[in-house]
Length: 239
Image (cartoon, rainbow, N blue to C red; front, side, top):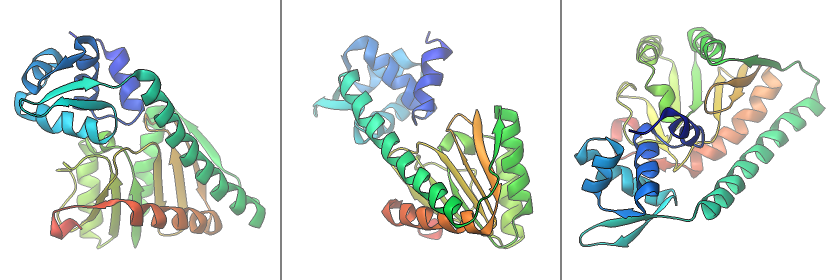
């Protein structure tokens, strides 16, 4: 059985629950087919195919043979270098957003620590939304059942929502929302009505929150660029 420590660390790097389990199992095996990985990772066999394909698209594993499908892990050093490069690029962009906003008008950015407090702030922000919400988040946030209620409330209030996440399966999101996908999401970004902005770590351990139209406008420019660079969903009503 896989312990939670490595899985938690892998999910903090942007992997889903199944991806983390499959990658860790394949690392211990070296190579394996979907059935072997499913058994070792303790995940449903039908899900192993899509999970391994997703890991391959993210550059975490490679296809050693196509028929039958055999997968092997990439060298950890190579993965680390690529992940670090993406993280550095993301935070350089975020730093540029906050630096330019700060130069325009000094604002106080509040730091919130602790998963429960960060999630409480996100809930509070969603509750206050009246016109438009932009969310970039790992799919693990969407697994929080309470978020389904919040999304339904936003829909009832006719609040427009743009969502960027890292999983093609988002059952918690009501039909009609615009959803796009990226291979990996390395941070949480939330923009509410062009007034509030939040940027946090993907494990929700800490975030920065500010209520400032100026900073929100700068973040919106970054998020719109991210939106254009993300993949459209195949579900037309969500695209």
